[in-house]
Length: 348
Ligand code: NAP
Ligand code: G4F
Image 1 (cartoon, rainbow, N blue to C red):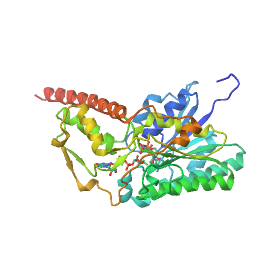
Image 2: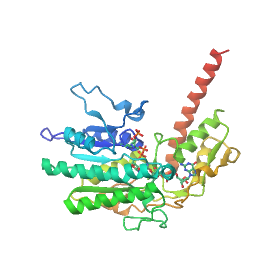
Image 3: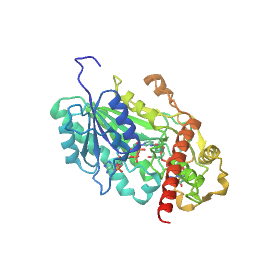
Image 4: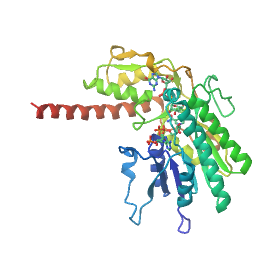
């Protein structure tokens, strides 16, 4: 950065989530001042970002957290007024597809209406401050639903869950605010992206965590739903760069972010089990509890536009991703087994 360039400020909703943590690291490395919205919880929910925390009283502090929630407009306005961001990344969501069938109204309130609250609040702020603020909206390949692959920016949406319907609404709210008020809104349409920090109830992490524990004798079985479903899985660390690139362009637009590779859940299971030298068929059982009332059978992204316009390409392929997650979770299970052994010794 040149001496006279001012430090950019980013505000991230969902900073405590998988993507929020990678994005915060990425922006701090680019010398941004990073502000995150965190929900008040009775237990700590900042595990993924604890390594970034610097006492905010220190002069060199560039990382700040604010209590907030996408259900609360006045609180969002208060945070935007205080932070005065240059860029906003709206990553906050009830992001679990299966859970959205159990909590459809809550999911719609946070994912769809929450995005509307943020856009409308931001519009008011822009009018009052006359400042340009760019906003990234975390859209999802789930919006394509039952439309057959490969899917790109022109593929029609056919969402198959309350989560996906809410993401489609959020996507169109974004386009409407862009067209109506000339706001700089970018919709990222991101295909599944994973990492060792992935929530433990998403299928990749559920598999690698369970196989690691089975390997060390800490767990007997792994219960899964539809293992024939196919996804385009990439690495979250690669995908946050694409979010940032979208906001660095001259004009706002919508972009698909994907690897272009497609694999079934079963293929992922086979690859992860191969790494830990386990016969997966001995341990995996199918439980209909994990089936969805309406499934998304196959997602495979065509990210040609993103590659051409942003110069972005994924760095991590399917095999490298499974290796990264499996090796991390084998190490986690090894430590867990050691602790258990120690505790058993002490209790003798
Ligand atoms: P995640 O790990 O589930 O994180 C979601 C974040 O949203 C968490 O920080 C969570 O806070 C926060 N949040 C939940 N409810 C909220 C509320 N009412 N108000 C404010 N914040 C709230 O999700 P992710 O994988 O990082 O995904 C980030 C975004 O990208 C989400 O919008 C997701 O729907 C979307 N997306 C993800 C993928 C993917 O494959 N990962 C693909 C496409 C799109 P707590 O920590 O307190 O729960
Ligand atoms: O890992 P999943 O729960 O991810 P899903 O439903 O594709 O959603 C994720 O990716 C979306 C992007 O496309 C995001 F927008 C969304 O926020 C989330 O991050 O399930 C993947 C597949 C599904 O077909 C599911 O039916 O795996 C299948 N599956 C089979 N057994 C299972 C299980 N999924 C989960 N979570 N748990 C199982 O036991």
